[in-house]
Length: 416
Image 1 (cartoon, one colour):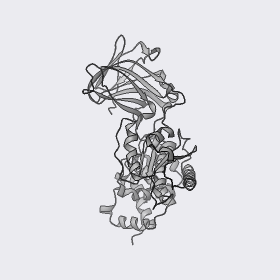
Image 2 (tube, rainbow, N blue to C red; image 1 turned 60 degrees about the horizontal axis):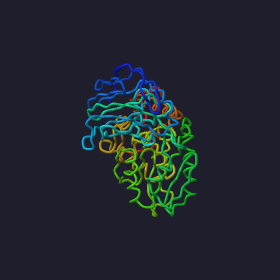
Image 3 (cartoon, one colour; image 1 turned 30 degrees about the vertical axis):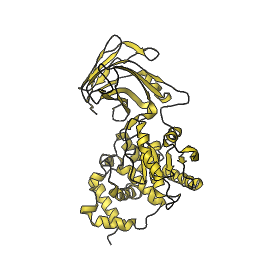
Image 4 (cartoon, one colour; image 1 turned 120 degrees about the vertical axis):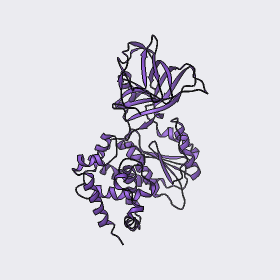
C-alpha cells in the first residue's frame, strides 16, 4: 500500500447517513489519488494504487458499538462486466494495521452494506476497533467515485466482530453439533466420538500456560475457537466457504490443521483420538491472535509458539535426534537464522528450527523472563522481525544472538 500522503481539499458539510454531519476538514491521499468536494458528494479520482483517507471522521468513535458500514457510491460507466475494484479500509493511525474489504462497483449507482465482522485484517497484529483513525479507499483499478453518503449502523445484539454462531452457521455442522463456550476458549464439533470433557480440560490447561507466559494478554473480544469436523472432507471444505464471507479466497488445506482469520480447524481421526496434537497446535494460533493480537501468518513467532506448546503436551521422542541431525547438515537442512526470523512465513520443514529459537528465548539467559516484553515490542513495531527488537529488549545485537543460539543448540542437541 502506498504510504506517502498529501493533504487534499478542504471540505464543508454534506449528508451522512440519516442526517447532516460535518466531513473532515482535510483528507489525505497518496500521489495517485485526488479528492474534491462537489455540491452533493465527495469525488475521488484515482489511478491504480491510489489511496484516499479521511483525516478525521467523528463517527469512527462509534465503531466498537457498530456492526455495519453503509456506503452510497456512484461510478459512471460501472457495470457487472466492467466493475472497478477497490478496498474499503479502516485504518489505525500510521496505516499499517487495518481492517479492509474488497468491493466491486457493479452499477453506476449502488449502496454497499458491509458487515464489519467480515472485514479482513492486514499487518502483524489484530487491529483495535477503538483505535481506528481513518476511513480509506484504496483503488485496485483506475476509477472516479462519488461518495454521496455513508453511515455506521448498529444491529441489535451485534458488534464489529464475528461470533461463534457466525462460524457455526458457515461450518454447517448440523443437528449433531456440540459446543462448549467459555471466556477462555470455544470448541465446536460434530464428531460424535470426540470426548468433550477430555479435550476441554486440556484446552483449559493450555490456556493457563499461555497466560502465565504472556501476562500482557488482554481478555479476548471473543474466545479463541477450535472447530473439529467429523470428516476430513468437511474440514477441507470449510476454509474456502469461510473466506468467502470476507470476499476473499482460501484453498482447501492439505495439512491436518488450519487456522484462518483466528479460527482453528481440524478433523476427527479415530486413529489419533481426542488428544490429537494438531488440535492444540492450531488452537495456540487462534489463542495468540485473540488474546495478544498476533495475527496467524506463518511467521517464526506464531509457528514457534504453536510447535513449542505442541511438543510440551505431546513430546516427540526423536525431536532432539532429528534436530541434531539437521544441525549437522546446516548447508541443506538449516535456514539461515536471519532469514528465519525476518518476519516472513517459515517453511513447514523448518518449524523445528523455530522451536529451538523459542527454547532459547524462554529458558536461557539473558533472554529468559523477558518474553512478554519481547511480544509487546514486536506488536508495537507491527513486525515480528526479531533483529530490530533484540537491542531494545535484551541489549544484544543479532550477531550475539546467533552465537547464543548456536551455543544453545550445541549443548541441547549435540551431534551424534
